[in-house]
Image 1 (cartoon, rainbow over the protein chains, first blue to last red):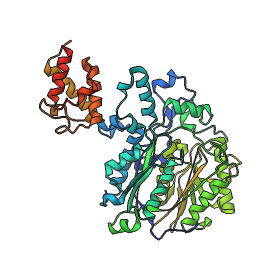
Image 2 (spheres, one colour):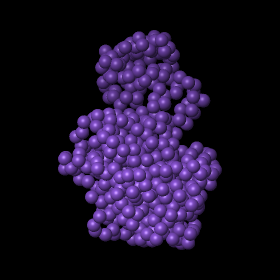
Image 3 (spheres, rainbow over the protein chains, first blue to last red):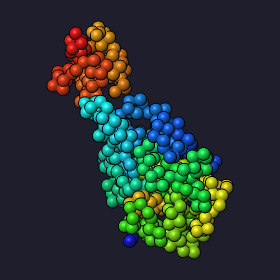
Image 4 (tube, chains in turn orange, blue):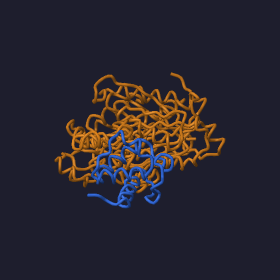
Length: 416
Length: 82
């Protein structure tokens, strides 16, 4: 594996709509304040179906407050969230002037347009085929969000959708790096989106006992690394970044947040949902990312972990980190921001990439909340209580994302 | 129950607005759905199906291609209601 940083890829725009806020900045401020985005759901279907889990990290700003009414009608919520985050990122990057044929879009989703799919199934059953919405298919297709962003920005270099469950958003950013490195594009809008706070996915995740059932205390339910963790908290939203070749960004005098230096990917080929317990697949992804970023493992000072708050997953990730970094593990500060955001599935990796980029840019690591009694099997150096100030000088960090199916994705982010 | 052409026009304008975001005032009798209002065939199908429900009529798929202007649609719906 060789590095390919002769055409460096930098981040010039950030956007997000999340359970913590309607923008990347609002989300970042909530993270620094240690707020939880989890709340009791007030949808009528929670009681109707007697769901075993009655809370989720639902989106903070409804799309109807941001988008035109017709956009909310003609786009699945997963596309709406992606569009909101992409427009913010694009504006944040200063709406770069770029040849449309040199502009790409890469937006991942884990589940796709599940609301449209099941709503329209209901329409078919209750009213017949003629009443099925003619836009049902483009709304439910998993590449709908990438297509919506491509259409909105006029991105013609390519519109792509990576699908790897909870690693989808991070993988899309890896795909975007490759688009720029291989010369297919100068600018790529990349991220992930998910709108799956719906009774079916909730029931499915609950049936596999993946969700926390701390119904009486939602804000304290997502507790990565804590001995009392009992599953993840379902979240929703989108996060999108603007990536550019460094040359393109410098030529237009853009503000550069950080370098997205590399992606490392691997597959466990172990089990459809369980991570490989010894973490060898995830460790390989992390080490690939380190190597391809022209770094040594000891250069990594911070990891934004996948850490979903499941009993098995958090331990497996620790084993992977320890396997990759050995004694250096204790020198790295680790944070688990899902303690606040919940788990955004196909948007999770994208959101945590945004947070890691913000951490490098602001030199601040948000603290993990709800860590009252750290699991002795996970002796990581977790940032708790106050956020951590990172030192001056060159910084390098990793963001981990893993997905059902054994997908492992690590992004390396360097200060610039 | 037959409605006046003006009532049908107003109801149709609401459907068009709901589906496309176009201002109801822009939906005038002599406007062409495709040329003037820029309504594509997918949106047109949604408008037709919603109009069937709203006005209690049936608009066969074979008829849709003949509904070139707003007036064509209003006239067809009025005829189907009577």
